[in-house]
Image (cartoon, rainbow, N blue to C red; front, side, top):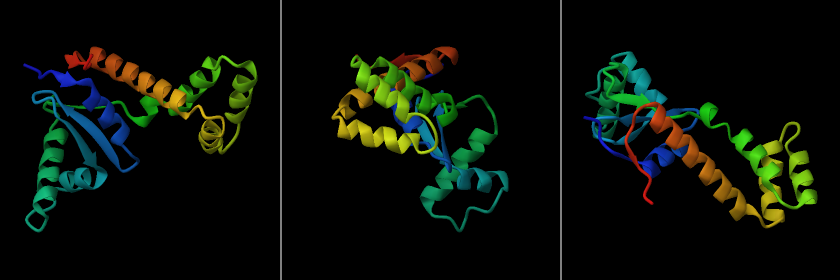
Length: 157
């Protein structure tokens, strides 16, 4: 039987990922693990783990479990699934002040959009609104992912 998962842990796992790491849910235990590409390569190459530190051995052992594709582990939504640019666009369009909305929508064009957007949040003092919007979007993505994967979750409310 699959474990009940805390939605906050799914969201934390989604946010913890990088270009060099991915997060997985252990469906049996409900634990979210952050797996480095290094550990996945070491598991794939079946490198000897005797010379590794204890924590690295544990990580490579978990990577081997993930790679065994037993169905116990499932990949969390990645940055491509999350699409922060799209979340930023919906935030811009949600702004009530037409002038502010136009300003922020204009910042989204061309390279450097992320930096301009973040700078403007602080310049206009609406960073709390952005983080609230982003948190809600991530929560929606996590809920949808759980439902699509038949994961029983506790949203903490």
